[in-house]
Length: 160
Ligand code: ATP
Ligand code: MG
View (cartoon, rainbow, N blue to C red):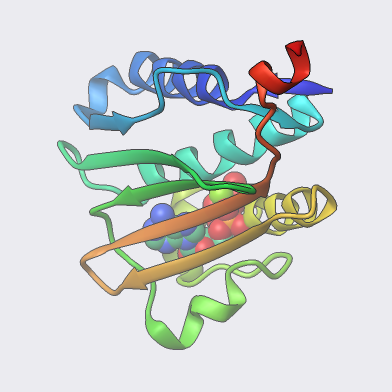
């Protein structure tokens, strides 16, 4: 199915702004003002952004900043979600997409969850021919980059 990813990202951020009011997180977004149609399973991709954003909130301090940027390229769209939270030590970064892996078991127990969120996200993104990667610095913050393939529908060409 063809889904407008710009609209989806706006919706998911709006939802997080609403449910995290008490944590005083500032959300910054840079999303194209035009529709970006991507062929995808809407529910699954929504779940991916929901997961990644809930991690960003969960591992951020009160009053932290979370930014979501979406860029289109000729044959792909990138969505970057950055937080200024606890970060992930370099040696653990390659493992966070593994099932049940959690960086700090004691902390993870307090925060709840199962350690499956990113494993599921990776599975869904790969099933859509995309990529997901993490770039993080311990105690500074984390960026998750999601790339999905898409093709520009040239309206002028289609209409001629
Ligand atoms: P679940 O998603 O099942 O509720 P979870 O959030 O612990 O549990 P994942 O989403 O798979 O599991 O993330 C795996 C681990 O990666 C987390 O336990 C956490 O240690 C680390 N992690 C993920 N995102 C971030 C982030 N934005 N900042 C810091 N650490 C993170
Ligand atoms: Mg999670």
